[in-house]
Length: 290
Ligand code: SF4
View 1 (cartoon, rainbow, N blue to C red):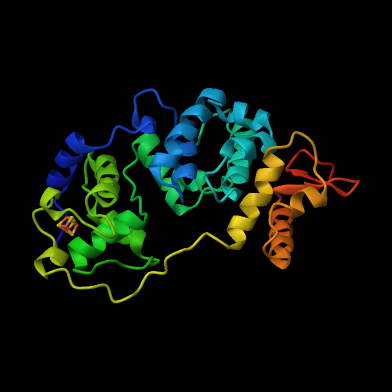
View 2: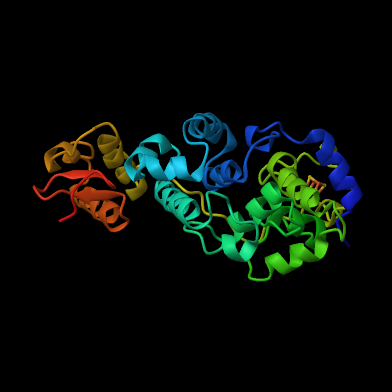
């Protein structure tokens, strides 16, 4: 069985969401910014921050000039703040080595800070209309259901080759890639696929009566985790225009002091926080590193 490109592409052309990074005039850099933000954060939370972001820093050079600390502040509550630091590093490289233009080909994109297999192909496809496979969890799930009759599938090394084999051999390939992702995001969702709205007339999982998943997915909790502790500490630093004392950080997470120390250590190791010569703490780029 294959995925009918005609069915999928026609559906996408009339059903795709009007997302701001899909509108005409959006640059490759701005699309790259959206992909960094969307990696682990839902569209609804990304949208307002992305709009403010590209208004303030429309180009790699503007982002690079802003400095890492301002970028971390603007990242706000998007979570996983290492992405913000990597995005700033990526902006510096593109501004200084690529004339402020995002490279077009996947191999060069893969050399940029913070750009992995998914982001490189997403930028090549969505910004430059390259006919390359773009594989995220949504695509993996749709392919598992339609072609293999399974509820879901874990990431595998051959995913890219498998999805590449599905791409139509013509100019609709980039649209097909975008459509596959969109189908997984809005119709063939993990918990409640809306099969009555699905454009695909053939689907093995549906034909087989929706056999249950054989693996149980871990639900990621946030409350009480090291991630939450890191977020609280970063909030203190984001809210201050000058370095803060250890005591100011300590009151941000009183529940578990060992966890707080571990969170602060990891922020220092990740380069998101720096220690000043007098022992205070600051966002990256705002402290003198001892
Ligand atoms: S028929 Fe249902 S399960 Fe199959 S691809 Fe469409 S939405 Fe997903």
